[in-house]
Length: 213
Image 1 (spheres, helix red, strand yellow):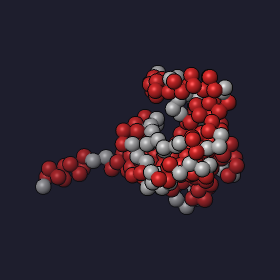
Image 2 (cartoon, rainbow, N blue to C red):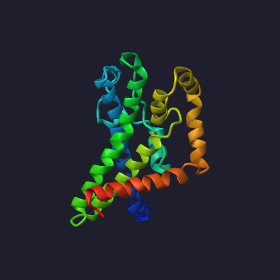
Image 3 (cartoon, one colour):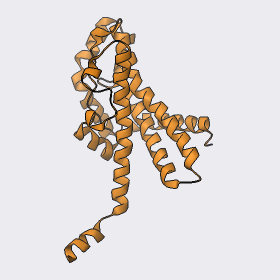
């Protein structure tokens, strides 16, 4: 009995709560991001995501557990990629670009709504205001990160739509090395100096839009 009491006393409930809130924020941002990829592809004529039950807000449909852990611990992670078949699109490269953009744009719109939630709850519930604020910043970060034009990030699909076919095939040929490049950039801090100011500026603009400043 004393052992259980000591174990309970040793638990840092504040840290545990913060971790659970962080997980909740990550799930919200990642799930919306991936679902919107599938929805965009569906409206462009590709039923693949729907057939694979990915037009859903159910976290279990989207979670990659290793990617979730990485996102919580480092701020950089991933979910299961939504399956897309560009052969269904009338213009495959353009369709892929629109489908890819849907994810980051959903994160930016989510951040705008969350900051509006901050304004509404700021005087009544600091807990919710802080949760909305933290999730908004995370969502902006996820959106900006995915716009980096390195495969397999969404920005590479947008860049590919602007490239001639020859350069497009060259870019896709090295897609399998993209994640390694991204992780090296993260480990050595090469992205923070570029992404930080962009995320901060978008955050300030959104705060002005919703009337927080």
